[in-house]
Amino acid sequence: MESTLRELRAEGESVMKPKCTVAGGVEDAYGEDRATEEQLVTPWTVSVASGYSLLRDPRFNKGLAFTEKERDAHYIRGLLPPACITQELQEKKLMNNIRQYQLPLQRYMAMMELEERNERLFYKLLIDNVEELLPIVYTPTVGEACQKYGSIFRRPQGLFISLKEKGKILEVLKNWPEKSIQVIVVTDGERILGLGDLGCQGMGIPVGKLALYTALGGIRPSSCLPITIDVGTNNEKLLEDEFYIGLRQKRATGQEYAELLHEFMTAVKQNYGEKVLIQFEDFANHNAFVLLAKYGTTHLVFNDDIQGTASVVLAGLVAALKLVGGTLADQTFLFLGAGEAGTGIAELIALQMSKESKAPLEETRKKIWLVDSKGLIVSSRKESLQHFKKPWAHEHEPVGTLLDAVKSIKPTALIGSSGVGKTFTKEVIEAMASFNEKPIILALSNPTSQSECTAAEAYNWSKGQAIFASGSPFDPVEYNGKTFVPGQANNAYIFPGFGLGLVISGAIRVHDDMLLSASEALAKQVTLENFDKGLIYPPFSNIRTISAHIAANVAAKAYDLGLATRLPRPQNLVKYAESCMYTPVYRSYR
Image 1 (cartoon, rainbow, N blue to C red):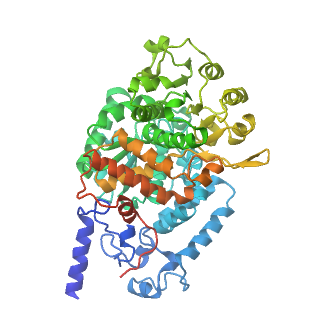
Image 2 (cartoon, rainbow, N blue to C red):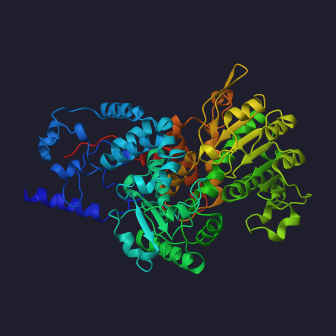
Image 3 (cartoon, rainbow, N blue to C red):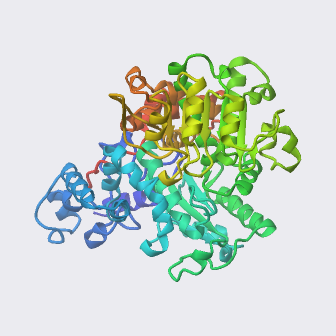
C-alpha cells in the first residue's frame, strides 16, 4: 500500500513539474498525444480526482462512458445513472441535440457548455464534424458571440490581463493552473474580425482559435492559453452597456499601451520559456505591424491576420494556377484593402514570386496593386501613406474607385480584404470577366455580412467563369446546370499545422520561409477531383492530415534554417507530427 502511494505521489509530482521530452516538447502528463492512446492514465488534479469532483473535472469526465470498473475504483457508483454507453453514442446524441437549435449562437453556447463539462467529447465532436461545426465555434458565429459576450459569459476560459494588473503580469500568469504552455493566442480586442472594437469581449477569438489549434492541429488543450489584454475600449455602446465585462474607459495608447505589452511579452518568456508560441490576434493595424516587427526578433511570435491569412491565400493562388495556367509571376494582383491582411498577403506573394523568378523583391512588388479608402495607392500619395503601405505605391496616375482601378490595371486576380461588404459590384466582376478567361476572385473579409461579394454573385456575374474563394463559408451555387463549390480561404487551414510544426521542432523564431513552406504544403493537398469542382482548397474533412503535412514542412524548414532546438531531427516528420497530435478518445483510468 505504501509503495503504491509513493508511486502515485511521484507521478503527481511529475505532473506538477513538467519534464522536457521529445514528443510535443513537454511531458504528456495527461495522455493527450496519439502516441499515448493505449496507456492507462491516472486522473490527477492536485490529488487523484475521484467521486463527485471527477465528474466536475472537464479534462477527465466521461459522463455515462465510465466503465463499471471505473465507477467502483473512483467512487462514482450511484452518482451516475446505471447505463454505460460509448463515446460514439454520446457524440451521436449531442450532435442530434445541437442540430435542434435554430440559431447559430445557441449552437455556439451548447458547444462551449460541452467544453466546460467534457473536454474530450467536445473535441471528438469538433474533429468528426469539422465542416458542420467550424462555422459555429469560429467565424462567422464567433463574431456574434463576441458582440454578446457580456450577456453569455458564464465562466472564464482564459486569462484577462487589464491595466489594473500593470506591474503584476508575471503573478497573473502564475495564477493559470497549467505550467507547460506551448501556444498563447492573445488579443486586445480592437479589431475583431470585421466588427471593430469589442474590447474585453474579444476573448471569444482566442478561445475559438485555440479550440481549432487542438481540433485541427493536435496541440494539447492543456498547453493552450487564451489571453485578452484589456486596455479599455472606444466602443461607446459597450461603455454604456450594463453587462459589459471589461474596463469602462477609453483605450490606453502610446507609452502606457507599449509598456503594458512589453511587460506582458517579458513575463510570458520568463514564465514559459523561449519556445512558447505567441499568436497576436485581431490587433488594430497601427499596433499589429509594430508588435510583429518589435518582438519578431526576440520571441516566437506569429500574427495570423498578417501572416496566416497571407499563407492561406498564397496556397490558394498557387493551386489556382493549375486552372488558370502560367506562373505566379505571370499574374497581376489587385487588392481592395491595404491593412494587415492586404499588405501581409501582398508581401508573401511578392516573396514567393521573387523566390521562383529570382527577380529582386522590389521588382516583384510592381505586379501587385492595392486600393484603400482613398483609391489606388500610387507614388504621388507616398508622403501621406502609413509606413506599411509605402512599398506598394507604384508609378501610375491617381485612380479614385475600385472599378476604375480594375479597368486600368486589368488584374488577373482580385483580392478583397477591406472588411467592407458588397464592394465587388456587378460592374467590377463583369469587368474582371471581360479580360480574363478565368478571373480569380477572392472575397476574404469576415464575417459573411462583410464579404466583398457572395459566391452566387461571383459565379452569376462572371457567367460561371470565376475561380472563387471567400473568407466565410458559402453554399454551392448552380449556374447553367453546373454546380460550383466555393472554396473557403480560411486561416484554419494554416495556423493549426503551422503551430504544430513550430512546437514539434522546438523552433525559437518564425521565418518567412516557414510561411512559404506552409503554403506549399497546403497547395499540394488539392486533388484533381477538387479542381474539377472549381475548388482551390482541399475539403476540411481531411484537415488533420493536411495539418500534419504542413507541420512537417514547417518543422523541416525550421531545421534547415537552424532555428529548431529539438534534436535529433526525426527521420519521418509527417509520422512524427501525427504521433504528437492530441487525440480525444477517452482514456482508461487505473
